[in-house]
Length: 168
Image 1 (tube, helix red, strand yellow):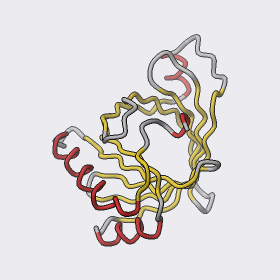
Image 2 (cartoon, one colour; image 1 turned 120 degrees about the vertical axis):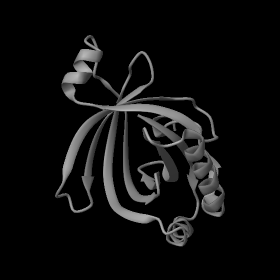
Image 3 (tube, rainbow, N blue to C red; image 1 turned 120 degrees about the horizontal axis):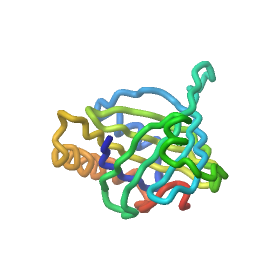
Image 4 (cartoon, one colour; image 1 turned 90 degrees about the vertical axis):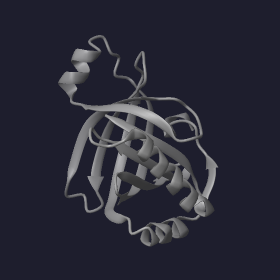
């Protein structure tokens, strides 16, 4: 799959929520996520355990992704994997965990753009956009939507972030 992604510090979460409401974004809910990173030869691999705020639904999956580390919106290629797929793709993989990131994610949707208001343990609050480029979506149009949303949310944002939470 392909996304157009952007990440920054989030200085004013209430203003970000108000902006979501003004944009008529749909609030999906709260997710509690733990990402355990494992070193792979190319890209990043994390095992994510995710549950809803009530704790009634939980799932674990592997996510492999590759993207440039830059502060502007950038293309991200990613795929979800199960244990068997990870074993087949990296048969000699040392699954030693290199980093653990724990976050509370407030999740919104605006058309094909995911809006994340993240509270990351030990790091602070962050804002993330993921523009989903599906088979029927125009990548340049999705990139334009992401860039437009960055400007709409800019008053609530801090420094732009180039890498992954695991890099911070």
